[in-house]
Amino acid sequence: MRNRLFIALIAIAVVAAFAILNWSTLLAPTPLSLGFFVVEAPLGLAMLGLTAVVTLVFAVYMAVWQGKILLETRLHAKELQMHRTLADQAEASRFTELQAMIRVEFEKLAQQLKQSQEVSSRELRENVNSLAAMLAEMDDRTIPPTRGAGE
Image (cartoon, rainbow, N blue to C red; front, side, top):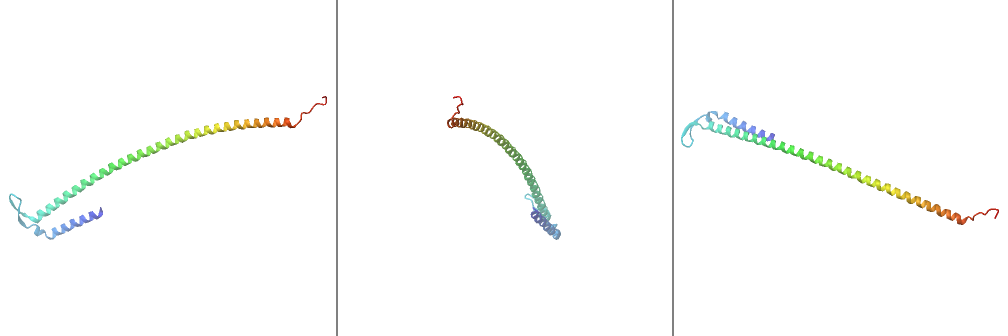
């Protein structure tokens, strides 16, 4: 951007220097044809004026063009921010859903673990009782009953 501005300023300075150096020639009257009639006027001054008008029109056009681009850029930035916000909200929503789903799964796992512990505990008690019964039965078989002295 700065390079273009620098080049434009140099071009304007060159045209201005040329006009100042040749001012007397630019002001020399010349017959100019305007199509239907002829006018006596300085050709150099007319050409300098046309150059100034074209430069001014170009500058206005560029200003309007840049203004439109700035407005478009702002609009796109606002839309981008809006989409970014929506994406962040959707992501937060997904995290919340995932957290709820994980919580439910942990509750299910905790319930299954509790049931598994209860089943294991019950089976262990049954095995202990069964083992105790077997040991008692074996005790009964191995130790002869003591008979009293009166028999």
